Length: 351
Length: 266
Image 1 (cartoon, rainbow over the protein chains, first blue to last red):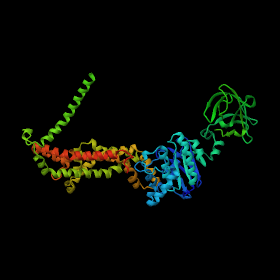
Image 2 (image 1 turned 60 degrees about the vertical axis):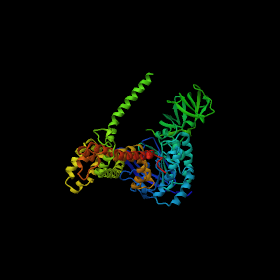
Image 3 (image 1 turned 90 degrees about the horizontal axis):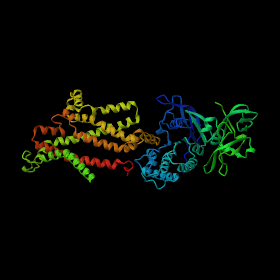
Image 4 (image 1 turned 135 degrees about the vertical axis):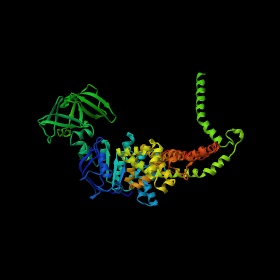
């Protein structure tokens, strides 16, 4: 497989105001490295799709904003001359064309010869795992197959950037997980610059080299998946990515005091006054009540297969969520001790 | 027992209503092949009247078909891109334009004809040619084409299809040709059927706009009713039916074959 190398993408002060006055995007400056997979993550209406469309050339940024591909200003180049590959949430396959015609459409537009198109088609169907379906009509394909055709079609033109707008959202959960793995492998093997929009945090962490968390048209945080997960910049990011216990309490002498006891703070955090901290559910250990500085009462227990999710009251103001190993034997009403490593207690900015 | 009685009563009623509507048409066509209508069938059957109609009015029949297909060509060339543009814009201006295009349906044909005569009646050559009638027909039938194409565009996600073709490098014209038109085919066919049918049967406008040398089929029919034997006029109706029914059936069949998206491609 010939690798498409892609370009570095730079957004410079890109804002977007729609004709009705809605501000979809605050001025945003962002660099996406060559070959990197950048995931835009956020709730609906946060501006992630608008950002993707600005990069694609489907939306023009407000005056002053610029889009650069490898330093070349493409702000005023329409999408049909930007050479970007797009995968839409609805796939937007052409119903009047077969699978092969769909995949080869961009090549046909570029005047690629029939023989070359045929060999490229063979390559692409093998790459995306849809060999044998070339002559099918689009309405004879399953959802997963359509997704692969859309991907093959977008990659066929050797795009400078591959843009994916919630490409897995239309699929059911088990298929989504499998295709996520395939997609990840494909993006790595192509080494292409990719921009991926999703509202699914698991997808974002599995696929992204870096994640841009967005809120209200602005960037809330940029970072590698681990960074975003373990050191969220603020409460919004903490709560949007995974589950989080957010505790607001008074700190004193390196501990925060709670109704059920106290939690130690790491040395590098603020250790006095009112603080807001985040603790991930899987970092809290269930121990015997006598062995811990913090105690509570089990309120709910749900066994979800790979783990047990508990809520424990009376430890903090609000119930704490805890993910324990699936072998944990606790019952509702049990009194338990909670052991928390100070390093896992992440202090957040107060708002 | 009661159910069967009810069913029988309903069936009889339905058949009576159908007969009420169909019998006049059948009688009219029968009159066209009767030697003397006032003496009835007993006077014998003949094709003389049909031949006479063909001698007198063959040109109007031919002209009607010319105008109908010219109208179709115009509504395709104007209507399909217009429907696409209106759908793509989808804003208040687009809705306003759509309303304006639809307006001729609400205005009596006579009024439109009068307006055309007042405005363009002075252009002698134009006034005397059948293209004058063509203009009237296009004004009258365009909304049917635009509306039926827009209806289909509304069902498929045209905007995203268009964007995805654009991302693959297709120019606006290629997108229109390769993606929009093929996927709007069911609407284009339905619209075409309406346009041809309406144009062939159009009388109001045409009656005002025609000259003795640019009569169409319905105008010729009115003419024969007014000035010929009843048998001739009836034979004319017969000819009209014989010509138009195969055409309509053919267009319906084509429409049905291409009507289902995804099966159109070879």
